Image (spheres, rainbow, N blue to C red):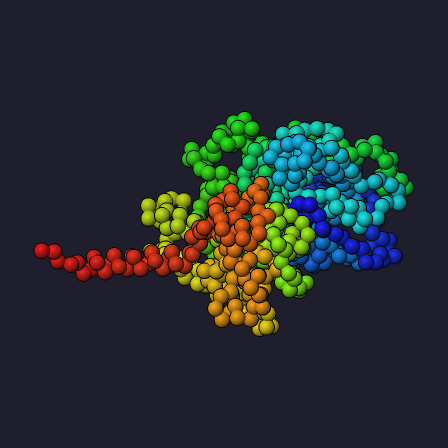
Length: 555
């Protein structure tokens, strides 16, 4: 089971009799052409921009041009499944061939967890959609695919160019022509997303499905760790394939033949530069890579944004803050949906297990489906990145950095006004245990960010970090309260550690020790309060101005 649990399913409820809607996959196109790839990009971009919160909602929304040809079907997918499900769905609707890695083996050796293998995985089996004159039922094919797929599929060496056991995806060049909607963003900590837009300012917008089938949208940041090519992070694109040696039936369907991939050397946008750096080094020496832009040395994520920007990289600080707050609000709304799914199933009323899972970020069962430690860690990282960016913008303004585009005379004040504006536009409601609606804003979330419980066995008030009168309606007893208190240090940790044992009892959590590698969490989370930072800056500036206007005489 992956962090993105293999519980995903696509269940057919009925099959209409109409030929256009008969649910059969007939392969009529020999290959994925550039025209098909452009249509794939448009398909993903449309779904990403849609106002929908599950994959099923998206595929049944006006954003999906193929929705009227579907049998009565419900679509479910977690993060690893979603890229494959959407690619397969698009192939089905366009008569295209489709093939996939059906079995993986950890390069680490027997017994290794293929989701988190240290040396990546090798492909040991492949499968493809049968090519017959009548066609094959698409729904069972898609159901079969999601039962094979996990994040382990993305965790394989990007340098491989095997024509037989070929990889489903390849490593693309890092520019706007290559990083397009439909590109996969793989986080080696067990998460996968799809790019759906690249803004002119270089931000890469992504959307993801989750184990509870909810959908979230954000932008790619530092939570997507850059590693060596053996683990396949960060960017991957589906490899074009074609059918050779097939015959064509009277109805136009291709029969028989075999699947042949486009090799790396045949792909115009294949590149290992996300591993080699710029100027390039050996991809396996990825840790020594440098990132130079117009002679300036940058970290990878700043360089990536510069590379993806139209023209020179510029920061418009007020607009940047608005965008980051809108993204955080999307994350909070997606979390609300996830918590509601859990509470609707009554998980909070169940007795908690005696111990935590062996690793809270990657497990199975109830915890995998309804807990939110990974989602919450990404949310905390987004808050932390927003804070760090605002601090950087203030520093850039102080030295009149050319990359900062700001013509006003009070950047802290303008940022604070934009913060207040976006805070008013973001409302997250939840119904407490007593059935009353509680409304929260981003400003309400900030001081309780490290109090948001990821534990599905706890009351909804604790899932939203309530205290005082807001917590009064919670019905958690002494045992769950003790669990909540013991998990405090785990909630403080924004870095996900998948290779650490975390299967502790309450007593073991309570007595520590704490630290990133202990599996018990950390003593304190990083600072994230943008409003407090800006208000403090304005107070100091005001005090400094008063001192200058009213100097104190010295003897």
